[in-house]
Length: 329
Image (tube, rainbow, N blue to C red; front, side):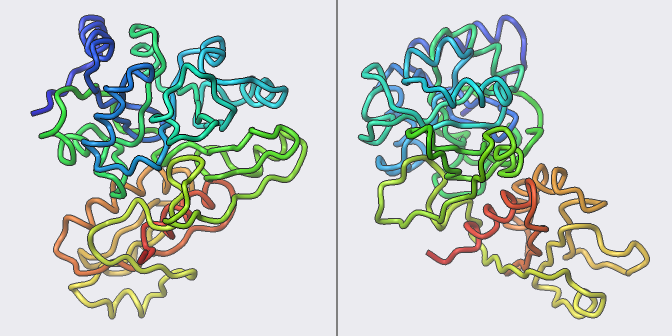
């Protein structure tokens, strides 16, 4: 069974040594918890696919400790410098041409690699200590709701791994934004995330829009691109408009409602009505999304109907997760 290790100098050294020896460690980040392996150890990276039940055609993201270490795994271009200066460390993943040092297993046979420099201080300490890039997809059974606390990891993978590094609840709560920079003259957003398309477009000086979900039969360029992903076991339905008072009052006790913001406090609410944010903050809603989806999936309700967020800023990324979570196939 996994042991949760608090952030101490001794434990950071212990877990860094474990990674260097080919073990896996569940690690915190500002986005979600990841299941990490030494990216240069193909045998260790293979364990990630086995433990998660992850298909080998779904590539891994490499987490780096510095911009200098990028040169070990990927080819830079002029667009990298501009985005790195603004957004790294942080929730931005870039797709770049890979170097031969990166195993084809990690990139699912692609000639590109997904890389980011995370901002979580605990993960950054571990990266500096182990002195190698870490391949780290979300630390959960493949396709299930992403973990945003160490308890989520322990529940999902605790009987399959030995080490979890405690880093507290994830600050952003959804995965990184992925930008395809293989052609710096024509960048595109493959997955919306913690950095909005509006913010990226402003820095890049051109309009960037999210791409369409990949088909299950296609080999994705980056993780998290399948049309069905982040999925609860129970039925999840979506609606584009807020629930009104009458709808909430008529809600069957076997069903749950997930509101974007808290309904009117004067309204008598049953125990099957949930909300992502008290005030309608998209950032807070994103932070709470996966945790509340897990709570609903573990509860007595047969299905949940969730409101979509306003389609701006991080709300677009939140809606992306909800749509993939609700997809039938």
